[in-house]
Length: 409
Image 1 (cartoon, rainbow, N blue to C red):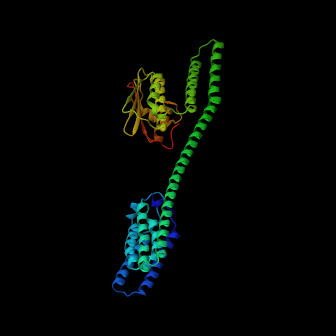
Image 2: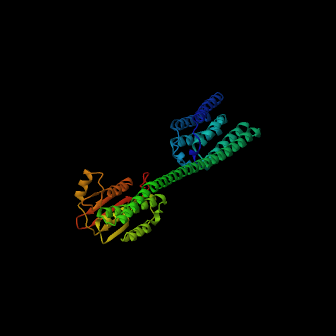
Image 3: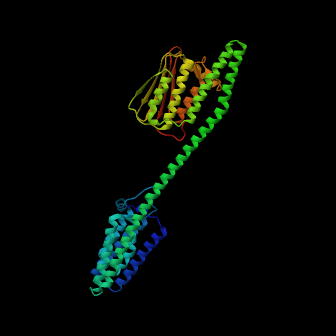
């Protein structure tokens, strides 16, 4: 059981501390007004001063508990307050045997012990307090009044049991509160995921009803006009091919928006399927392990864009996709033997025209690179592109294997 499970009640603590001080003074006045300050009286004075000073150390050392920490009984004993209470009890036990008048201090000391210490140790100390009070009263009555002895004894046992039961109930409540907080956080996370899925479906529906439909209509009109005119214009053919490619890519985007993200532990299988569909070789390096869905989704999009660029711009005859599991990071490399491009020229053109769709002789999609870079930077990763004219291109993406609040979608 934990001391931290109890509620911190400053008013009650102050009442217990003031009660112990008042009772100690009253008991001392009563005792020393009837007994000389010599022999047993002198020992009682030393023990009373020791008990009061030790309790003062505990009271001064008390502070409000940290709600984020659960303090065990043994840890509480090692604190300044715990040491003070133990010393005060150690001085008070023989004091109440020698001078039963001080037995009344046991009431406040009982509550002080349970305020600081918990578990079996608190029960043992409480029992010792009850026995000391009963023994002192027994000696004071010389065994003639058993009611005076048995009353405090059984009353103390009942109070000890009640405190132990209260500790267990409060510990159970603390565990229940922690479970409720965890459940609330899980529910909030589920609601956020459901909201994100609903928004993706809404965007996909809007794209399907607008962009896809109008692109398909424009493509049909071009093909119909070409059949009617019986002419094969190069510009019309290029426009038709561009519209058809745009339609395919848009439908692929819609599929990614509507379908739930593929489970992270199947990333290798998904990338292998993407590679085969794109005519690329696929390999895995390192020990495969499950990763976060956010990281998995971002790497799938990077590979998809790199494969599109390799076919559309690089005119590559060989493409290789490599998935690498590093220690704490995941990386993908997409290498092709295409025509390559001048990275310096690409970066210069990208700065001059942010709206440009292609750069460096249509060698690579400027927007595609910006999109891949954004996905990696959002997750705390990096995107590196190595390319030279006539020497192919290597796209490398590395991202930490953790879930970030701003995932790519």
